[in-house]
Every structure is written in structure tokens, then in C-alpha cells.
Amino acid sequence: MKIKNFCFTGLFFIVFSCTYAQQAVFSQYYFNPVYSNPAFTGSDYKLSIRTQYRSMWSGLGLGPNTALIMAHSPIGLSASSIGVSLMNDYIGLSNATDASIFYAYRFQTKIGRIAAGTNINFENYTQNLSNALPKDPGDPVLAADINLFLFNLGFGLVWENEFGYFGISSPAILKNSLSENNNSAESKTIIQFNMIGAYTIDINSLWKITPSVLYKYLETMPSQFDIQVHLLYNDQFQFDLGYRTNTTYVVGVSYKFLDELQIGYCYDLDNSSFGSASGGSHELLVGYVLNKSKSE
Image 1: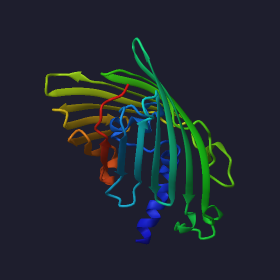
Image 2: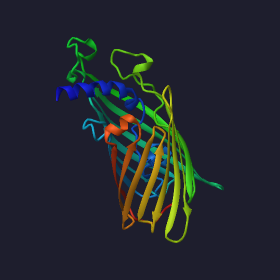
Image 3: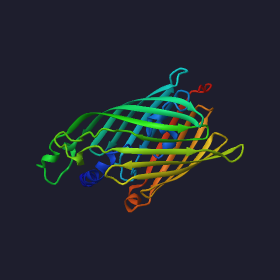
Image 4: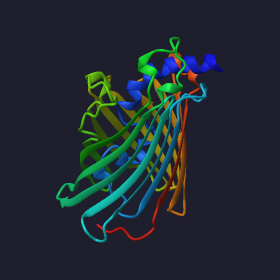
């Protein structure tokens, strides 16, 4: 068991900067665009609750795990919407728990609706470095745990109509240090910009198809591009196929009950040499949208 923990500790230090320097990855981004862009707050025009859970590298048994719950709704009949979220992101020796508040304002134009949004984020970030199993027990880098409280801001813009949307955003614009004693660029969070879009095409009275894309520009890191196709049958069954630029293939399915409750699952197959040994990633989604008349 100690050998396994030691190997994972080494893996943790390799992937740590990638995992905590950017937003957590969700393959089911299409179901919860608010997480990528705060301007989508209230975009269902009803009270909407989304819960997502993602387990990466299931074959290793110690891979990253992320849980997110989010709720958002219009404020009465106004053009404003508000939302809240709570998320926990865990990998090896590190854990991040954050709470966010979202706000968006919409106005109608001749070519569709325009929304502007912002989010405020509060995060508790910890590294339990004293639990590592280093070769050198006296290594000062691993001698003390880290416990930080971080604050950040994000913003976004969205254009939307009844068929689709396109948005740009930055989920966090402040460069926070992830170390209590090191303020170098390598120990700080990076700036990220997102572009997300989707467009729905009616095939016939029963079938609809929606291509969607999510592009992430990551400062000092390789950018990430997700492309998916969502096939919807009778407004209830949905099938998803996608590809992520790190050689990951995504397959998903979801089902909607009574126009209110939705459950979904997707599996990520990483086609890289590391992914073949990791066992892939699993993601679950449960969503609820209050079934009442749409107010615009």
C-alpha cells in the first residue's frame, strides 16, 4: 500500500498544477453552462438545480473527484437572475472547497437576447503535504500543510435565442497564490478564458440534434477544445458523443422525467498511454427544473 501511495504522490505533483490552475473539467458541460459562464444564470427562465459528480482515473482508485451542486433562477419577472453553487474538488493530497454567487442581467435585441453576468468565488484550499511519503523524511517542502482562503471574480457575456447560444467568459480573473511561502508565477492560479456555443436543429417531430463546443484558453498551458453532438428523442432521451483535444472520447446518455427531473451519465475514454492504464472517467448528473410557465 505504501508503494502505491508513493507512486501516486509522484503522479500528484505532475498533474497538480494542471488540476488546480484551471476550472474543474466536466464532460457534461452542455447540461450546466452556468459553470462555464455566469451570464447563463437564469437561462432556463425557471428555478434550475444541477448536481454533477465526476470521478477521474477510476482504475487508479486515487484519481481526482469533483462534486458540484448549483441552483439559479430569475428574480421574479425582472431581467435579473441570481444563482449559487458549492463545489468540492479533491486529488491526492489537495482539496478545494468553494462557494460561488452568480448574477446575470438580460435584455432583448432584434437578433436575440444578450446577457451579462458575473460571479464571486470564495475557496478554501488545502494541501496535506505532511501525509506524503517522500524518500527524504526531512524534505522541508513536505514538512508543513497548507491551508488557504482565496477570493476571486469572474465575468461573462452571452448571446442566445430559441435555437442556440454563444458565450465568452473568464471564470477567475485574479491570480491567487497556491503557496503560503512562494509567490512565484509557478505557484499561482492562471487566467482562463472560455468560449461556449450550441445550436439545435429539428430533424423531425421526434428528433433534434445539437452540436456544441467548449474552448478553453489557458495561460501558460495547452488550450482545451471539446466538441460534442447531442441527439434528443421526444424531448426525453438524449445521447451524447464527443471528443476532447487531449485524445479523450466522451459517450453519454440522459433521460428526462415529467419535464422536471433529469438524470445523466457519461464515460470518458482517454486514448493516451496513461489513459489506457487509468481506467477512464465517470460522470453523473441529476437536474431539476421547476415546471412553470416561462417568463421573458
